[in-house]
Length: 272
Image (cartoon, rainbow, N blue to C red; front, side):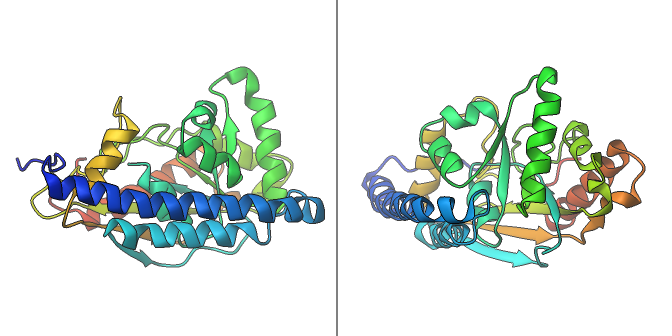
């Protein structure tokens, strides 16, 4: 198996400094601009965010050329009221999924405390949830409020990240929020598959970030790679929540769509 470790020589260090410096400047410069705009947007528009998501999209789209990664999209994000669900392989998913649509992630509460990623998540309107069954009604009310405000939420129903070569079973718990107070009659769900193709000579799971992997070393590994790979976002056909009798049926349908998208894109590397 080919090694996917970052180069330890001068060339790799130079790439980390150059790419990391530009990426940091663009990211935190965009974050500063977003926070300034939000000072005006929030009192005028409240929960609605008509302007700042455009800043997020621009920053995330520019991130891939800075890192040297190819980025492509198949299909179109829906404009209907609803939510999107996707497989989760890496911190890069945040950039990939934000770069082509205006969305608001749903994330576990501890992410809000993470350096760098937590700051970005809070600033861009991420909805944080606790892994506590006692908080189910509170979370359901939060989702309903955001959806009725016109926000398109994005869930990672696997509940954790993977190595990018598989799709774990979708947990149906979060789908329960779509069956409350008549939301199922107005909402659609769009399954989305995020596909990573490794750089030449690297392992197929090069971009995967999972388990107890630290963010810093993984970021350095990606930045240090002279020849990068690619990421592709595939939007599948949206489905009406009302067409499914239960959250379990809805979760399974979305899981199959996302898994089939990854399997067809990675026929030799996919792990079933």
